[in-house]
Image (cartoon, rainbow, N blue to C red; front, top):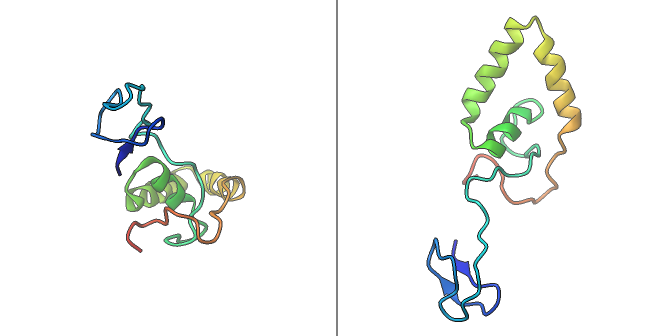
Length: 105
């Protein structure tokens, strides 16, 4: 994804702090920022809670699912209640929303 000056529209190299054309400061979004937490429509197994966490924080979806199952077994089902609460609390993606997990589907 290219970086452009918001003042004059000049294409800038990645990591530029100032525009080479108009000397305006460039404010780039942090690259490690998590995406908003929402349940994807594609790639979900039960309700998409694990897929939402994996997509939002950049974690491996299989690892998140395994950890959720292990915690559910070890907590005598308390994690199941937390999963239901997350299912209710985390909004689903709107149909046709970008960022479908897994990438490339």
